[in-house]
Image (tube, rainbow, N blue to C red):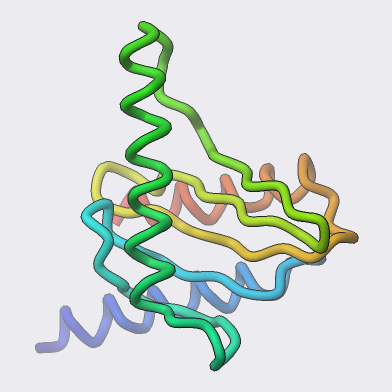
Length: 123
């Protein structure tokens, strides 16, 4: 039971680190199969649906890269008029999906998020 509590605390810490980054308006950690592990997003968003879609987007990008004999993508960016979504792998079992606002510095944000995803991937 204490391992489960410890994992929940670690996930909460990673989410706090993520939403503290400039330009981030929401974040979730998801299993690669689409199960929601933790989230910090607006109440109006269906977290379960968004988690499943995020896993599908990253999985599809990885499959497409494989078909083309490319290496796995480090991230997928969905560009929107008023912001965007960045999805990054976080080890073999998880990913992180980040909702960003229009003012976000995407390259800087990707570097900062890579630090978080590396920590998640180590667990």
